[in-house]
Length: 378
Ligand SMILES: Cc1ncc(COP(=O)(O)O)c(C=O)c1O
Image (cartoon, rainbow, N blue to C red; front, side, top):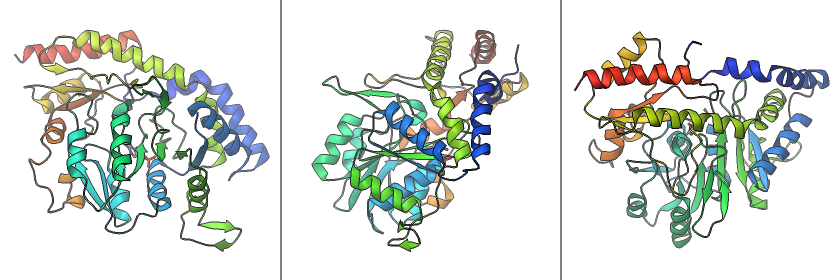
């Protein structure tokens, strides 16, 4: 059996090595390393894939979120509602810009923003909602967009984990994750479903004037060369990364299918086990399985992790401490117990190896090892 990895980038690279190497060498031959033709080509291809008017490439997913908030002219003290059950970047940029993160609970099945919690969190100071499409499945975007419209709020989708997933509205309209809100953001961190060989990210919007603004901000707020009309940042996707991403974009849907097949095999193995909750699929979104995350019940999770590690099965806890209980983000607004679903998930979830290169033998081995532990601890 091939060694089991949480993410197997090496096997994935080996399969597309000639395409990737050729693309890299092309950039090296042109020596156009920043904003070269490879960046424009990838940008256009991604716009087409997503069905969105504008893709603004940038340096990483964290910057994509930060630049989005800068472009919306959010001001210190403005409240931005997001979830506590997320990667730190979502909350970090809100705090960094001196906006106020308002953290709400999630649905215990999909792990995405809870709509009642969202409605309860809106105040006259609320300016934006940042739904996180956690683990590869879209939050309830139809309701979020309606609530946002009613209260005149911006929506920035954190689609860092969900690129390629489709959201279906009740009238049958389908849109790609990240293209529904006023702005969408993604990350091309190597382990992401569309990952480069370093850091990378992008911002999506259908709004022409926002797109112009976003392009200025990622490039030092520069409208005319060396004339800076507003404060910006240096956040660029380099040409080598764009060339690699352009190759991988062609494979993104097939990678999603491989991940979905692996998830279905895990589901079959764990079906009806009273101690394991398999990922709940939302009726309105496809799931591209950035992570396959189980909720454990009445199991010593540390011992389970030890057991899996002893069999060379890597696993991860996304996320062990919710944002409202992290030292850097402590706020008198929240105390332990305030977001019970999030806190319970942080104590009980476990993410299994998940990537485009999983094979049946590996999945069977992982499932058996996990079930051995679960069933022997009855
Ligand atoms: C939900 C979420 N938001 C934001 C980010 C930040 O992306 P990056 O690591 O590219 O800055 C990530 C990825 O790490 C993420 O998973």
